[in-house]
Length: 263
Image (cartoon, rainbow, N blue to C red; front, top):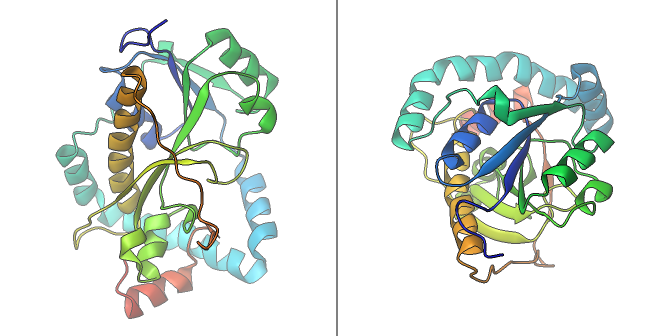
């Protein structure tokens, strides 16, 4: 059966949050979004425990200070700029119709696998979930794709644009659309775009700009699928350094703000 804008089956597999809402609203009037599957967020204690194991005590404390202090301040002072981006990029934060949503405990649960098989989608758009298991990815013929807020493979993990600017690599401050595998942002690259920022942008607004550019890449990909055009992909170059990044720490952020002029 030839895919069209009306019969292509797309589901969004995501966590609760504004980026998921923006993503859905950006697609719903063009493509057929059959379902939005929302997994429960990882409990704060488990998140903090896992982060501690990954980065060690000193960096863990530094990151916690940033997340619970500086990040909140940046969010407050960026409200006007955020509204401006939403308006400029025509992004909507209107609430998703609850009839479209099914809530599950985990994206990797049997419940999730059964639901996806029942829906039988052509494409699963992933947004903000935990790392997907091989069992889930192999349980369906659907294509899994993700908008990653960074240029892979150099900036895997979170806040890729911030770290690119901090490392004086503005040419790598951007977004990647890629196929999903069981690694951390290691799937084949479909497309990438570099973002442009203003003086009023900072750590909390970079991801919104990245999302807006990622949605453009996503729409182009979906249009090409429907038009039966060949999708070119890019494997990671062996000589390229691949690194997973986390949130900055309090003192890391202050250092980069003072010496690298990165907000």
